[in-house]
Amino acid sequence: MGDIIIAFANWIWGTPMLILLMGGGSILLFHSRFIPFTKIGHAVSLLRGKYDDSNLPGQITSFQALSSAIAATVGLGNISGVAIAINMGGPGAIFWMWVSAFVGMATKFYTCSLAIMFRGKDTNGVVQGGPMYVIEEGMGKKWKFLAYLFCIAGVMGLLAIFQANQLTAVIRTVLLEPSGLDNGESTKWIIGISMMVVVAVVILGGISRIASVASKLVPFMVGMYFVTVMIIVFKYIGDVPDMLKLIVSDAFSGKAAAGGVVGTVIIIGARRAAFSNEAGIGTAPMVHGASKNSEPIREGLIAMLGPFIDTVVVCTLTALVILLTGVWQTTESDGVRLTLAAFDLALPVIGRYLLMIAVLIFALSTMFTYSYYGHKCSNYLFGADKADYYNYFYLITIVAGAVVSLEVVVSLVDGMYAVMAIPTMISTFYLAPKVRVAAKDYFQRMKTN
Image (cartoon, rainbow, N blue to C red):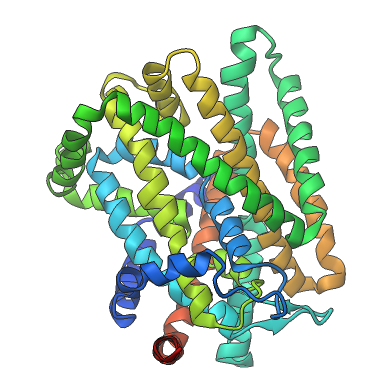
């Protein structure tokens, strides 16, 4: 059974998801008339809160919605995912991550505009958003099976088991093992229970507390990581142009990738970008749908900044550190250990501890937001009065993630992500013309104001 789960995850995250997410996103980019490029300035001004109105329906501000969404996407994928991409596909994989990010911006624009356009109400009468409500309210009751499919996959796929496992490994490697304080299985249990308590304090307070913590944690998290990486980049500043050239040239030659096949490099880059920024999966529309915003296009414009911040900014910084230090050519390490080797080399003594803090905040912020996503799916499936039980199930799985071996479970989570993308992208294509009409109307009103 485990082998079947692993094989399914590897198969569906190959060609099928590439066609759905990259191909579909490219179509949406053209359909939007390149809004991610032409309206990015307006999106930034919106983010500053220029049009915020606390009296509008919803639970959080647009800035808090973006912070919460970025809290889920800016995580271990930006640290270990980039290292895996370079290890498997060479520097050229980063170029295709950039391409995927711009395509993903168009996907996020559509999915999050629809999340405001077609909001529903849960059994308590609270306004909610997300692909399940978009399907029910926008496509009609006959498509409701897609909403159920999304939520069933969401309940299983949006557990923080991977984050718990990786964070436990980093804490043991960086802090405990060098000090002789690691006691094997008992240490895993202690770390797991500690993480569960920290996450419980935040998530049991609901989306308002999650958003409040995320809106404070995320700017600090990205800022701290940005400063640390810029110190490293400045140290190797003379080599930066060569590394950027290498990323672009290798994208079309594939020389550094195994077998030198360009197609392989594209697949690796696109897959890692999809895991990193989650465009098209349907997670971000759930939190953007809770935003205090009555303008669907405005929310879509804010949301599309997510893949840019996540992949073009944060992932590129990580890639530069790995390439500039040369560890990708001189070590057998992979994932977070490869990034750790780069920080160790560039900033001896303090480098690994700075990365440790980044991993800690990245992982915890992801755990906070994932709990909200899974709670929303449970709310839709079982009703608002029973949804809170999901939080306790979620917290128990954090401990499980810290102590068990996860190849099969991670593959199950990956597979569920792919299943979530299917109803999300079907509903987006079906309702895309309504977004285009709304966008035309919105920008005409902006001109006359």
